[in-house]
Length: 111
Length: 120
Image 1 (cartoon, rainbow over the protein chains, first blue to last red):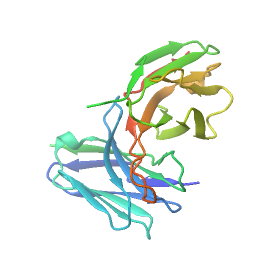
Image 2 (image 1 turned 120 degrees about the horizontal axis):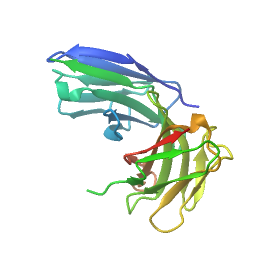
Image 3 (image 1 turned 90 degrees about the horizontal axis):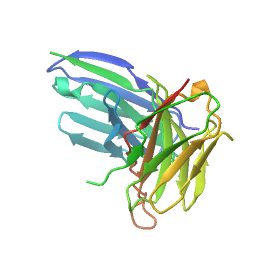
Image 4 (image 1 turned 60 degrees about the vertical axis):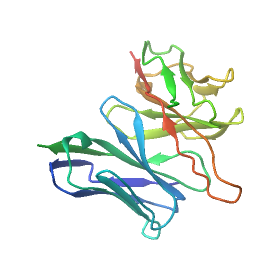
């Protein structure tokens, strides 16, 4: 069974700063997802990473995948308050259709 | 833009009662899912459904739970006899397998807004 671990679980940062959220997973995963969740809201898909070395960027967020290290990262560049949310990574493995989620990283960006 | 919808947005029920949560997946999607999120915790997979049958289910999805696609648009989750610990946000999701044969399929899952279930 795939286990997904994120760190940190809580992240408070100043606007304009950079930071990285880490997502480790326990077994071979054929794809890795990043989602954003605002309080009381649903999950918004940010990135789907399909292969080793995949890097995707959208605005101030950049996600990467290292399948050999079983590690994905979500890098935040020059954070702004609007990025405050909980970010989840999730993996899929073995042809299964379900996703296994990490515990989430609650990001707070302070002015 | 097509989206997954869910009703009701909030359901309050007494312990032991049956509830049915409803979802309308995106119309051309083939796979349907239910997830739950207990307040402040991570999202947990319950069940996936394809071609009118369950394709996978987690250990959470016991005999109290069932899913159905009663018509061409709705996808429902029934909890037969609710327990206090069933209180959670329940998310429906759907996906469309894309890609040519032999290629890794994309399987991006789109989530609905959720139904908050409160069991008293």
